[in-house]
Length: 110
Image 1 (cartoon, rainbow, N blue to C red):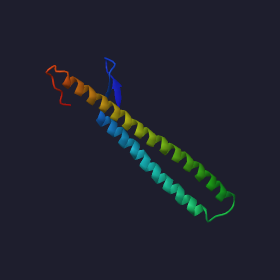
Image 2: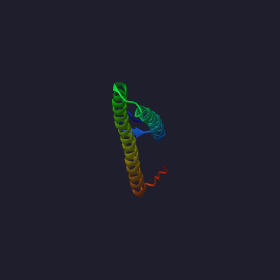
Image 3: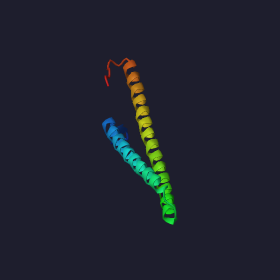
Image 4: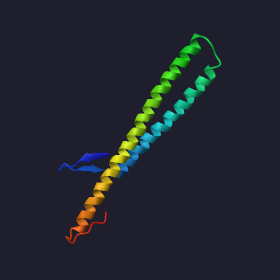
């Protein structure tokens, strides 16, 4: 997503960022499918009694909790990445405006 150049400047490749977010979103989609499967297993399991049914319920509850926590972490990561990109876009815009208003005769178009 970003790297530091030889001058120590942080450079963000917005295309790479979009690809990173796309990959993370794909993981979220898979996790949602897994959660649906876990719910289906639990619904079927609810018709059974006994120690095996209890073990399945325990396992599906634990898996659901792990998946939900990991989904939350990925969603927070996506939000953080978007916030960083937005912040650096704002910094770039302000710097461009400052350079353009400095009267040095050079205008930036980016």
